[in-house]
Length: 258
Image (cartoon, rainbow, N blue to C red; front, side, top):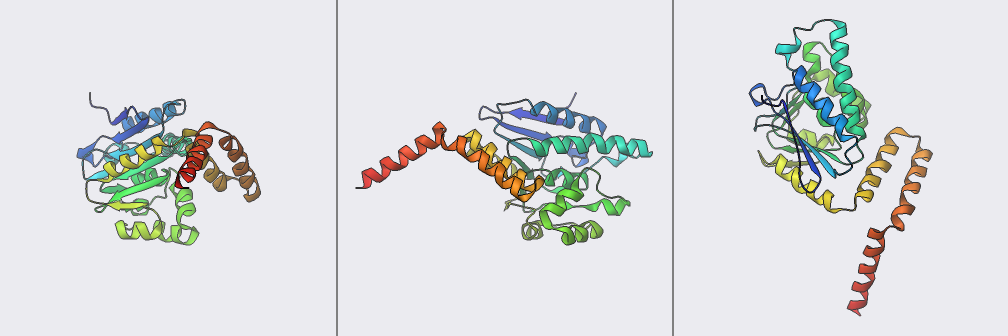
């Protein structure tokens, strides 16, 4: 039996989650949604991970959203509520992971695929990327949280524009909007994401977690409370071994220059 979602964890603590339905442009059926949600729940208690990469199998798509061939057989409001709770909760858990999550986007990221992409901390896209919040073409709104996340990324007015137009967004526009951190050669998004994840894995893990925590505080806390959160993160890191060693190495280098 082929897994709809592939999971690997390497010796550096880098987790790769791959949407594995390439013949369907990695669209998610119910089994894939459930597998994805289960994997994200399991990551909550995995203290050995340093970074997570999400990507799609093949070169044509990251994820093209929900599989309408299957989901169209479930037309009721209760069915819809079940889908959006399953994936909405999974993406909220993904977003709350204490370590960086990178979307390596190859090709299409449409509808639900775009919702998954904006739930990640960073997005590395290949030059053939085709992202689109195309829900309006099916007379729908986003259901997995992309409305709120998109607004925080690009602002209210631009988010309104993108959701009402439902157009395909290419690499140059993604960069302009700030929805892509980097555009790379076709077929190399995962390689570049892995290279960056290895850099993250080499950093002191408490510092990496601290950076994510202070930034997320700014998204969810009042300004002065977020400032206090940032202040509370700093002192333990100042007294920790990685900082003390870095300072000692710096002082030795300066002494050697004299």
